[in-house]
Length: 340
Ligand code: ZN
Image (cartoon, rainbow, N blue to C red; front, side):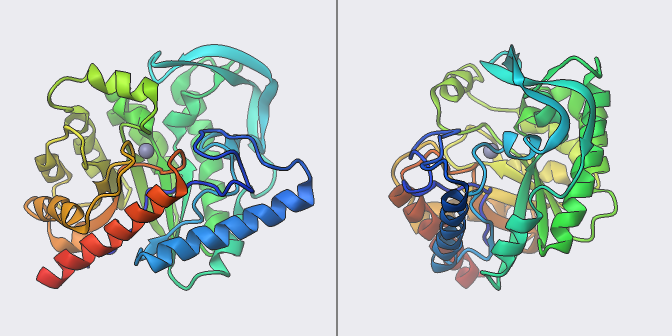
């Protein structure tokens, strides 16, 4: 009970990529050296989690530059040379996005080798993260489908094939990251949930969806400042997710103006990955602070439903900060486990 996990990403070592940056450049262009560096980084990322007492580990997303584009780079139908400037996350940022120019196709497994490598280096439960269909659609320009729900369904089909290959390679848990759910609230009960259900159809592993308020980057901090005293996005999206086929919902609580009673909206039907680590601060939480978040969550669902977690990925943080936060997460969960 109270098994700990992380959202997904961890900082990369300087010998793999430029530190403290999103979408950082690799430190080497030599393919063989890069592969070796990625694998070394995965082993360290797993080791850091194990030392901190994290029960369900990830590869720290060490092998990809960006949580959305890592998977997209291998899908046919997307022209990465044709960048179109669009406003993403409802115009929160402008980004030069690759363009969908023809029917989308996955011609081979994308991350299966990475899962197999991570699987060979830990006995713990292994989670692998993929971007969710709505978030992918929101991070691309489209010249082919002309319809966001239709394009989301095409990606959901591809993600489903990929997820099945990742489970075969040794993943115990597949998580879809859907920060866009917090932005397009009206679309979640319709095509957002439908595409997610399609992505997890027939998967024989635990499945999760992660919905957050993002990293501590300037654009996000400005957006959060506009959200008022109570961030009530989860109120709109958790009832439809309670009726979805997903097993676990990963939510942000630490340092966020999110009322924890929203957990009740999942109606005891889903596990809750309780964000007890704030990824926007540079000071590791104390175990007692983590424990306080978990104790509060226990008011709204049963202990077997709670998985203490980070709010979001930790890729932009200094490594020592992230290591301190991992330790606090493990130690804070242990405190509450002992109480129970
Ligand atoms: Zn996140």
